[in-house]
Amino acid sequence: MIRKSLIYKTGVEYGDYTLNHALGCSHGCKYPCYAYMMAKRFGKVKTYEEWLQPQIVENTLEILKKELPRFKDKIQLLHLCFTTDPFMYEHDEITQLSMEVLRMANAHGVRCSVLTKGLLPESLDELPLRNEFGITAVSLNEQFIQEYEPGAAPIHARIQSLKNLHDQGCRTWVSIEPYPTPNMVEQDLAELLEAISFTDKIIFGRLHYNKIVSKYDGYQEFYNRCVEQVTDFCKQRRIDYHIKTGTLKNQDGQ
Image (cartoon, rainbow, N blue to C red; front, side):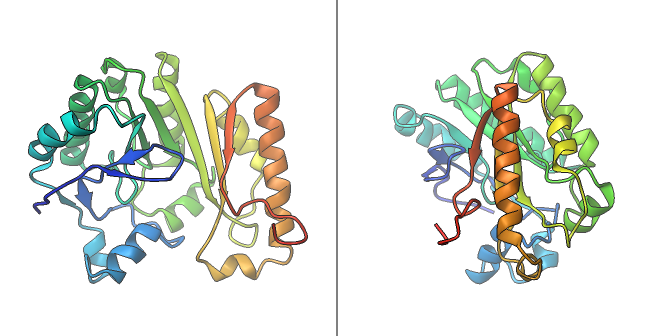
């Protein structure tokens, strides 16, 4: 697959600019996956099965040689990735390309953030700039993970890969999004928070685009309680945090 451009501006909190150097994701998340829904809607893929077979942007490094000099003074944090996974589980070719992207960006003075449901390579700590490395972790229940993130890395191995980088002095973060309601999985949010308590930042967000949530009586009150629990935990442990828009609402829906 060939593209004409890669870097583009975004308003999401992970970074002000982003790039996606692959189309598709073998993790096959069934929350559902917003990236898959948009790719299918706009005709980039036809089926879920096609989405599970990621295609690399073959001219990624060629494009970045042209775009990084142009964007480097504008970018505060370049995010990998919004519509694919930079460290897709058991896809060495994508991991290797992601490492090349990160090295090239850092060589131009551009700091990066990454978010994955795969495993973070320990070699990330060898990069020259203070990048930010994150994983998604919404449950410690492996059965739930296998059902909703069928191709992703096992959750405990995922967390350990993040802790390894944190212990090496890297800045780390965890995205607890989309957090499921109890009618999807019974779990203790405190247990999950404790498992990731070493991290520097936590982002928390509710589940969207799934009718199961609305079938849970009092789902908004549930998310409001979760937000309070996350913010209290982070304040006590001096962890940075961000609550995604639309997760916390009062009785007026605001």
